[in-house]
Amino acid sequence: MHIIIDGYNLIRQSPSLKRFERISLEQGRMELIHRLAEYKRLRGHKITVVFDGWLDGSVQEERQREKGIRIVYSRRGRTADDVIKEMVSHSAEEILVVTSDRAVATAVGRRGTVAVSSPEFEARIQREMEAAFFMTDTELTGPEPDDEPVSPAGTQKKGPSRRMSKRKRLAKRKLKKL
Image (cartoon, rainbow, N blue to C red; front, side):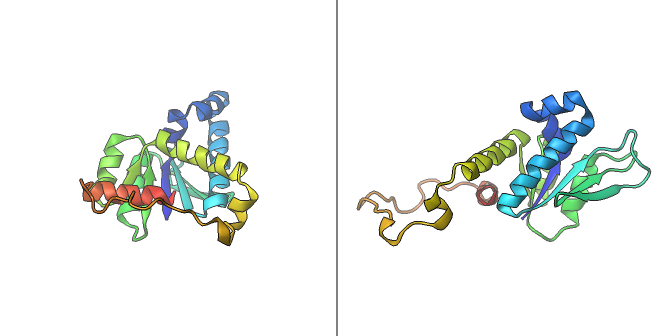
């Protein structure tokens, strides 16, 4: 899965990343990249972070790679939102977009791509990091053959009583992969 992140949107929606941004914009970006690199190490997803460069950025779009994370700075006169929409429309791979910008989420949703809010994505990253930190030996090696879970008979329900919409099912499926 390819995760495309609206960088400044995530930084400004996160209380912990906002503290770094108050020190300097560069510090906020570096902390975000550091956290995403740790997440990538655990999950292996392809991650691209898009930052705005439209006010005082370069005349050309800048791309770089740091700690395995692709970083894109939009060119002067173009927003990160425009770059994200273009990336989604030109890609054939499975994509998840992280943004709290409603216009971007709606635009990528029309193309069949799922958008996750920045706070929700940050919470998932935090849970993943905590789970990796507190893993036991059994979780690392897998359960013993005798440790198979036993479910009580007759407790499973059959068939959906109310089925979610196709869009919600797609979103749920992609979120499980995070």
